[in-house]
Length: 321
Image (cartoon, rainbow, N blue to C red; front, side, top):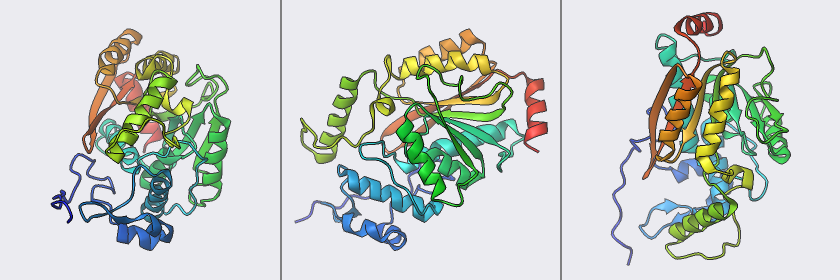
C-alpha cells in the first residue's frame, strides 16, 4: 500500500518569475527531449514519477535533459566526481542579477553580447554561462583554478554551436587571486558572479556530503561509494565561504572601475554581517541584497559597485544602449 500521496504546489513560488523551472519536473516531457533519462525515472513511494537523487548518474542525466529541453544544449558532460549543480538554482541567480542590472538601466535589462559577465569559478559544468547566454544573450568570461574544469567547459562550448564565441574560459594560475590574471588592465566587465565554496575544510565538506546522502536515503550513510558533490576547490576553501567572499571583496576594490557590478551568492546567513562590514571598509558605494529560495533552502545574492552615479550613467549610456 502506497503512503498518502503528497499534494505538491503546481508552481515553486520561491523561484524567480522568469525561471523556466518553477513547475515540477515533467518527466514525460523531459524524456521526449532526452530518451536516456527514461531508464532513471520510476515511481517513488508516493506514486510520483521521479529519479533517485542520491544516484549521481541519475542527477547528471536529469541535468542533461533539462539543459537540452530548456536551453537546447545538445552536448553536456562533466568529469567523474565533479560538481553537478541544480539547474533551477543556477537559473535563479542569473535572473535575479539581471533584474539588478535592469534597475540600474532605467528598468530595462541590458541584453546581447555587448554585456560581458565574469563567472568566477566556472567549473567543469559551465552552467551559469549557458543560462546567461541562452536567456539574455550575454557574453561570458569563465575563470577557474582547475585545468580540467577549463578543459571540460571548453569542450561543452565547442560541442554546442550556439555557445561558440560567446564564452571564453581563462585559467587562474594563482588560487589566491580572483581578478588579477583574469581581467586585463583596461578590460571592462559589466558584471561578475560567483558561487563560493561552502565549506571551510575537506573534512567539513565530506561531512556535508554524508548528511546530504543520508537525508536523500532516509538512513545514515557513513561511507559513500561515490562522492559526486564536487572537487575540493569546488566545495571548500580555508576559512570557508566567509573568508572567500571577504577576500574577493577586498580584491574587487582594485578593479573598481573595471566592473560595473560585482556579486556573489551567500549561502550562510551568518556570513552576511562580516560581508557588510568589509564592503563598508573598502568603500563600496552601493550594496544590494536579494533573498533567493529553492525548496526549504534560502540563500542570498549580494551585489556591490564602486562607481559613482555619474560613472554609472556614463557606463550604461555608452555600453548598454
